[in-house]
Amino acid sequence: MSREHAVIAKRYAGALFDIARENDNVEQIKNELTVVKTVFHQTPDLMNVLKHPKFTTAEKKNMIQTSFGSSLSTHVMNLLLTLIERKRTAIVFDLVDQYETFAYEQKQTAAAKVYSVKPLTEEEQMKVSAVFAKRVGKTTLHIENVIDPTLIGGIKVRIGNRIFDGSISGKLKRMERELVSAKS
Image (cartoon, rainbow, N blue to C red; front, side):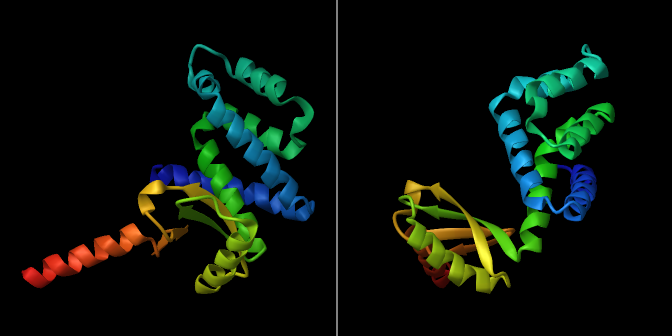
């Protein structure tokens, strides 16, 4: 993502978040945006059509309205139509991520990716959330568990741009670096 895209996505997400807060439907809009992101991810042809110059703006808007129908609130639909008008559909993924960040910050929650060899149980996720939320100054974490067999054991937690590596493979790599630097 370019810096310009990030700034633009943050502006749109911030405006939508302010509207959602005023209408007390932050969570509903977050869920709708997640659906939009999923649909765009699962149908890359949709994004290609939205970027293609052969289709008119009216045709693109009609396609979005037909595709999502009444499943989206007026605010989310208007946002998508505005992005089409201004030829900014490329920022959809960044916009959704930024909106989620705003929604999590409001609830003192942070999004976290937890990498593990096997799926974590609910109890294990709650324990990870309790321990690592304190480290980043939040009350809870919204955990996405990613299975990574290369870890050998343990977990690796990514919260924003911070990584806490408690995996066995991470410890082995640190030991290797220490041994190499000791030889020098």
